[in-house]
Each structure stands twice: as C-alpha cells, then as structure tokens.
Image (cartoon, rainbow, N blue to C red; front, side, top):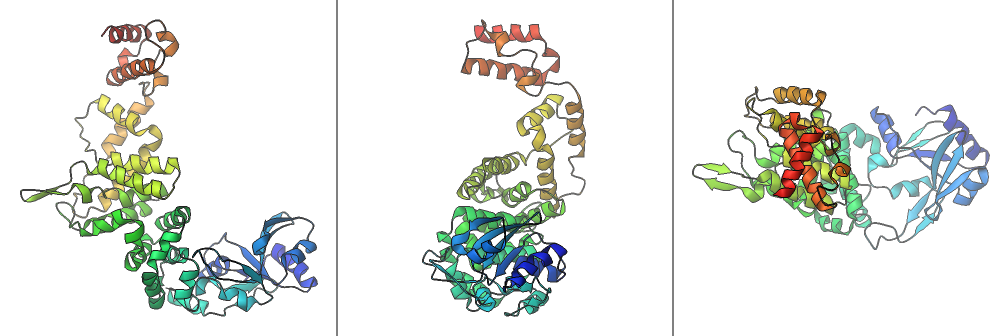
Length: 443
C-alpha cells in the first residue's frame, strides 16, 4: 500500500522505540479492491501504556481492551494492541482479552479472511495469513478458521456476513453459510441496536439483494423480519407478475438506482408488507384493501423493534401510508393542498422517489403512469401564497381570546379554520376567520 507522509511519521516513532505499526481490516481490503476507505484501524505489538509513553497527547479510548487514541500532527489515530480473546459467554463480547506480541495471533481472532489483511505502515507491505487476497479475487466471504467457532464467539458476525455480501457483491462460502444456518438462533442474543446498524447498512449498500438473499438462506430473515419473510408466499396478480417478495426487492433496487436516502429504501422494502394481512379473494381477483395503513403499522412495529430513531421511524411509516394515492388531473386545487399538508413539504420529494421506485418494480404497469402533472401542480401551490399551516393563517390564538376558550378548544377551532382556508384560500382574511370562529363556537 502507498503510505502517506503522515502515517510514515507515525510509524517511525513506533520503529524508533522497537515496535511495529500495522493498518488492518477494511482499509487494506478496500485498497486491494480499488475502493476509497474511511475505515482506518491500526494495531501494534506495543502495549497500551507503551503507546501512551511514546506520544504527548493520547486518549484512553478503550484501554481495557487495548485501544488508545493518539493525537499526532493534527490527526487522530485509534491504535489497538495485538490481542487474543477468551470465551464469549454472551455470544457477543469476549469475557477477557490477553495482549500478545504476535500479529499472527491477533489476526486469527478476526471475523472473515477479507478483513484479516494487514499492511505494515513502515513500508506498505501487505500481509495475508488467511488467503484473504484469494477470497477478494474470487468474490468470497469466508469465516477465518472454523466458522462455527467464529459465529459462536459473536452472533452479530452472521449479520455482518450478510452486510458485507450486500456491500461488496460477494457470495458467502458454503461452510460459512451452513454455520450461519446452524447458529441462526444465536442472533436473538444480539442487541437490537447492533442489528439495526448492520441491517440499515445492508439496505443502503450497492448490492442489497445479495445481503437479503444471505439472510433468507441462513434463516436470519425469518427470525428478525418475519413480516418480510411472509411476503414470499404472496403470488403476483394484476400488474404484478412477480411475487410480493420479489416486488419489494425490485423496489429497493429501484430506490437505490434513484439515489434515494436510506429511509426511502427501507420504505421501498416494506411498503407492501401489509398485503400479507389484507389479501382476500373477490371472485376471480385478489384484493388488498387498506394494505398501506396495515403496512404502516407493521413497519412501525419493525422500526420500534430495531430501536430506530423517531425521525427514521416516522418517515418510513409516512411514506408507506401515503404511497398508494391515485392522482387524476380532475383533482381540485384543495385536494393538492391537502396532500401537501398531510405529507409535509419536506417529505414530498422522498415520497415521489418511493412511488417511482414502486412503479419501476411493477413489471406490468403501463409506462405512461407518472406523477409529473401532480408535481407541477404542487410546485404552483408552493409558489403561491396559499395557507398550508397554522402559521399561515392571518389570525392566531391571541386573536381568538374572548371568542374561544384557551387549550384544546383553541387548537380545534384553529384547525377547522385552516381546513376552510385550504379549500378556499380567499377566506384567509382576518375578519372572515374571526366571524367563522364565532359561528363554530355558537354551534
């Protein structure tokens, strides 16, 4: 590997003190693949206190496990001492770690061969003790040593295998996949936060289909996302020539191709899961009435289970709930404004991305179906002075004092006034609104 002057200067200090410094893991892997990397992990034969003694400014990032952050020439470098690990009684964290002076022993404890490459920071030489270069060339994800042992040590590694498959477009080696199947139940011991992190990264990867396929084949999907697993039984009907699961994966791939953010990609993957609970036979047709609202609740349960942020959960659920409307040029201007209010100006572009991904994944849908006309009307409404929020009304709560009681009743009246103005923007005048408020209170 090419060594930058900054890293060479860092390595020189280790060298002068009789130690070595290596770059390991993702950065070396990505260098070999010709990909950019921001994942720089360093390891050394120097003990944590020996690392601290070499530099004026350090941070005890995780000194118990051998990690010290070195602040050097304007840079920040996390450096971990070579180590071996004890048993993993919780299938996630080692019960203890033991510092060693051997790079070989350190690399043995890592997860996959492609992540066990090291590069000597002094001269850039790449060190491969587990045929990781061969696996990179062949596009293979293979556990180091005995895959059963690796996954018993840390059950999250099974999700990481699926995620690396999605990130790199690599297939999972047979014995490694078999071990994932055998130990799939161990995934229940892993925190939801860690699973969310790996799953979101999988969905947001260049090859999400491959990661989902690994989850499906290993049985992880059935355990973690039974709602998604169940979609495989829904056959295609009408505009859908593919089964429901395939449609969802195609939608995710279309969202990827459109450059959508991860919340839209998640909505694309989950947008029709409500069909499993709403499927009914009506004569010679199948119906899925209200699958978008049922799907919203199912997606909310998934996102809550994953302990996603409120913002992520609410966006995904909003997109799923609103993705089914059928636009017609006959829509009134009030209907267009209601859509804007219901979805929120800030969410419209992403909702349209989901609808476009859904259309691209519906293989028998006529090509002329488009949201372009609606987008133009929305643009016109947004550039007008039409009131779309309570702040746009030409009165506020203070103006209603003496007419309406403070509290919930005030909010109710203001909401009714906004409804009126959305239908007829010309009524957004102070006197008209005050008179309407009096009428509401009389009733």
